Image 1: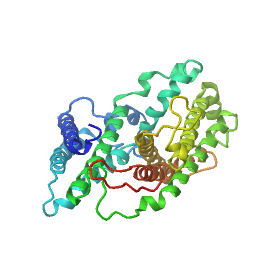
Image 2: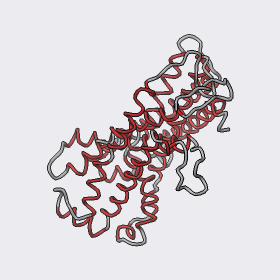
Image 3: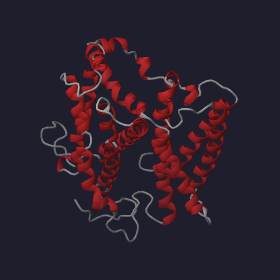
Length: 356
């Protein structure tokens, strides 16, 4: 299935989209579980923050439900047409345009920082929970409420729409459906900018990491003293430092996208030394992280644009605004790495002379 994903991804995307359309219909008539805006307890608890946190922060089931149902039905039809390779007239550009709008909307537009919280704080909670008062007060149910899980489902659906668009383009342009190569393929944007994007993605999270490590070491950086003291007493800054350490580790691993050890396992990795690194082992987590941090960065951009920045708030928002320079370059870097690592295609036999 992994090797032939181009043949089934459109149908899988259509099935998910139709299922979500049925949920939209359910919410239209007042059904339980509406996960956006007025149905999101976290946003309802802080109405002044709702629009700053989420673009759907004020959504209601009466308005959003019918829109979700209509978009879902239209999306299911579009996905089936793309899976079948229909390209008559304007459909040739309307279908992929629609797919990319949905892909970007689902992976970034409707998202906020909570998708990143769920993914990043799962391992951190396992480490911190037994040893700090923050861990004692923080329950697993707090980490996985339905609106947060819904955001993760939407993110995965956005990835599926992007793959559907890629598979469709290969079908209608005559490119190889397996590797995407055409008859006259030359150097691309990814080839020219992949390395620059990689080093940008390595450097971008470091400002965030430095502020969180500083808090854990006792430097407030000018934030409200009482708030800082509460964070020290609860262990919040320790959890933040662990999250920053994950970010720094991710920056180190990102270097593998342009280093030899990112293609062949190094000698110190017993049992794997000298073996080829599967490209997807690097590409999949890099694309996922790029989507998560870009979505979170969008929320912090809204916060700064609406509330501005002061001497006591800059460490809370500005480092995360810089995640825009982390997520987007990381996505480009991952695609450039994938392109470089494709190797000869067993289907079309192109790529026998690849640039290392």
